[in-house]
Image 1 (cartoon, protein in one colour):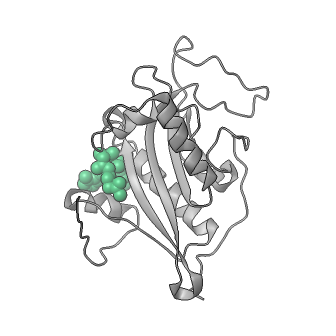
Image 2 (cartoon, protein in one colour):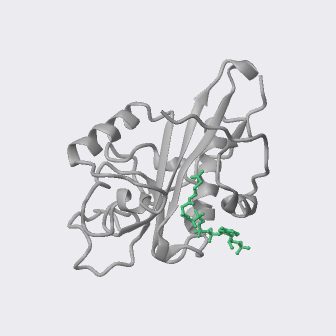
Length: 207
Ligand code: ACO
């Protein structure tokens, strides 16, 4: 069997495992949480991240990547539920800036001061690692990094780097023997800074 990347003990998280979160937040290393700017948190995507408060939603963040289009609440929730039903395959994370004025924050509060309530701040970055289960390499697993986005006004603060480090750590913990991605030429220096190297050639076929 292909060697899985080394695993490390499950760390603590400021988030509780919850039906609203896409996957168990304990998969996110505490060290990565600590490496973020003050007031920023990294967490799994939440069922509540479709909120349409201006400029705070997950979907708005993705617009730095490409066209997102109009997605109804119902359609968002249906897609979220699909991912949740396959939560050992889809790991979508966001970075939330909790340094928002109280008047903009959501009404939900946490009963424990050590826990953070998702959706009270502003989502500023996002990314996904999709875990592919193969037959080759004795049923090996490969992580595919997709849809990395940092809001235009938040770029250059190492949030992109932290998103990638978190997705690599998740891939490692769930047993992937490698994590790969496709990107444009202009993003190659960024991914090299994140520890990736050029391998093969990306090809595409569009319907
Ligand atoms: N060229 C050269 N170096 C870069 C670039 C670049 N385009 N972007 C970042 N870096 C460097 C930074 O200078 C930094 O280097 P340092 O550690 O020496 O200071 C390091 O990479 C980390 O940079 P971050 O601050 O973490 O980068 P940022 O938070 O701005 O995120 C990202 C980078 C994700 C590319 C962001 O600019 C973005 O969202 N762009 C628009 C959407 C996009 O292109 N997403 C990637 C699509 S590919 C995919 O999804 C697999």
